[in-house]
Figure (cartoon, rainbow, N blue to C red):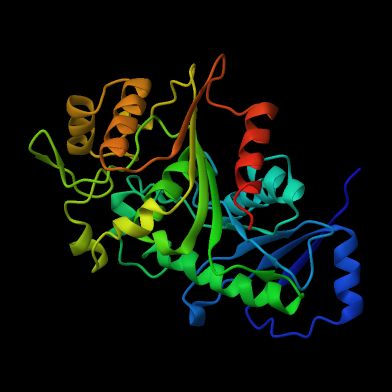
Length: 320
């Protein structure tokens, strides 16, 4: 049976990790709950999973997987529980972390039921326009968490690359896809699956219809005060997969997409999940963006051990 040690570090965690402490956590899987730090511009806790025998004083990679509770709740403890489970139980992210001996970061972002149309865990348009400190620019908050985690890991003797691996399934896949457009320079490689067949498109319009975020790039510069870095984006190795029986379709729900976004998708990209998946592939390839796209027979909105192994193998091949 696996033993996982839990440690809670407040935002005043400036501590000295002694050599004896390093040896202790190195023997067992360890889960750190890092408390929010508004001074460092992240307003929520994050989970840091460190698998046993992670290499010390040798370059490795930090894996990041956005949290996905699967339902809204105004209780942050609900979202924290799901984030802890994602980090420490047999999720795809935990499997990658455990098999490759790399640390895993999972943010504890809320998905409040009191904000009916804000789908934080998918990084939708509503949350990107939100001005409250706790929900404002979750992409930048995640970058701040990543930078903080690098400091924490460095104190343990774990040296991670400046770029991260990112993984996601379902809403967290959608978050990862959109995050990669905004911050391609931060990502070494990514893998996503189960994302309703709908990817953010690397273009301003389709059939003379403007594509605003998160459908495309039309208002990208206005929202993010910078141009889309297509050259950096093309450099990201991507593994993008769907189960052929996966009909989970967030496009038809108001918290995920507005009525206008839904009509644009249905009329120009596809009304069915796999229609959209095929169209997205076609449009990526036209822009000379070449992810590894894959379909899995007899699989719905879940992953199998074979799929998890292929994701692990994909990331293993990116370690240099």
